[in-house]
Amino acid sequence: MKSAAKGLTAILSIIALGAALSLPAAPAFAGDDGNSKNVTEDDIVRALAPAPKKPLTRGLSIAPPANPAPNAAETKLIQSVRGRSTRSLSSTEREEIASVAKDKPNIDLEITFDYNSANISAKSMPSVQALGRALTSPDLKGSTFVVAGHTDAAGGEAYNQDLSERRADAIKRYLVDKYSISATDLVTVGYGKSKLKDASQPMAEVNRRVQVVNMENKTTASK
Image (cartoon, rainbow, N blue to C red; front, side):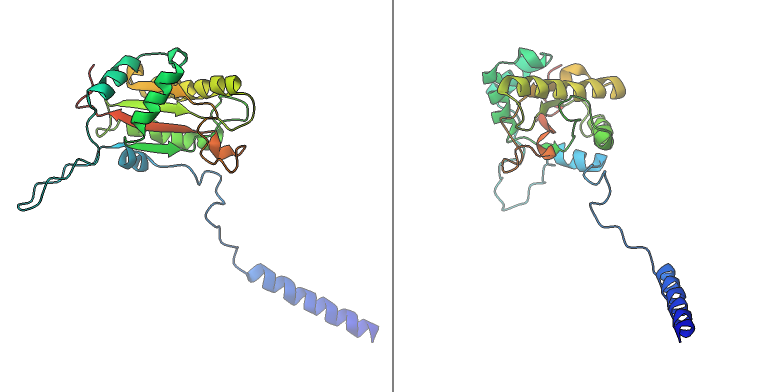
């Protein structure tokens, strides 16, 4: 009886193993890819390019443009910060830039950095490269962009302000070196931990990011 039981157990084990080997591999789910948060060049162009002007239709009133051109005050601000170093911007100028930027075409890229560092993380490099290609595309080349660095809530105000500035500068340096974008077309600014993307999780990686804003279309940018 014991011999028969052992034989039956062996047969069942072989059947179970064969069934397991014949099963298809488990499907990969969205989010399993370490680079799932990276964006494409087209994503960035669509977000940053000014909305196309719609042709006039008889009998319809003209609505305000979706992305209005900079007014005199905005143009003056933009021209005053083009070519300036990140650290030269006062807190007042940083807030003025943020105020103008909120109504401009923008994209909040989750370009993350190594913890406590201005080194671009390897998993975010595809997004930075897509950004370089987008900013040199015919739709965007020659415009003025704000590159704003942000940190999480770890550490003091002064430390995070410095870190956010270094992170913005790291992106600018990469874009200038690798894609030959004019340094004066990239206005870098740091906001430290003052503008968390996810305030409910102040230490989350998502807060260590860079936002890119199209401040002035190439047709109105003064060179």
